Length: 271
Image (cartoon, rainbow, N blue to C red):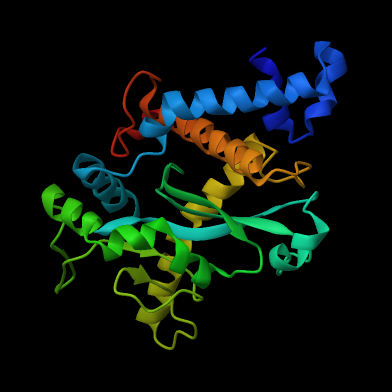
């Protein structure tokens, strides 16, 4: 019965879609999906949705130095909306934002290989990227100093770009985010050749997170199709399962062996 929850996640369809094919009831199909999601989280969440440790930070830094030509880059940060078709009418006003339909927002940070190092889900669609970051656990680890301590332990910081020395790793973001020292944004109206080159580099490198969201939505249609589930907990658990399975696929593609721990700086022969 492992195939049933995988098929509903991959095709993005309600629990009842495949009950005739599998000869089960709707309630049993729902139970299968819930138990599958619970098992995936229990078995793989610690490994495949882990907070990067000092070794991970060293490898992420090496990957982006080789690919994007700079030190100190953690990844790219952005948000993606998932449409909630069966949002209760009483909640619709709180969840209906720019998508013109009730939606739930996923915030993520990915590296060049499209591996999610941070994923936070469950924000109302009325919030924008800036206000979501105010609620994000990623901001929490920046404010409490835990991420800064891991940076220091890894030896990634301080680093130099040109003649300038920096003491914090950074993420690439778009223009809506705040002017924080860790946020690197493009120049809205570049005037010089150097500014134009920099903005083109920033916009190109930030496509890492766009590719990650796109790959996630192509592989697991549940993330891209309007969700026909009432329960927020069930939706969040399904999305978490999709993220874990996505990272497992990325790790297997990069490492060439599912039993090896994901190393971002591994050879690109398997890409």
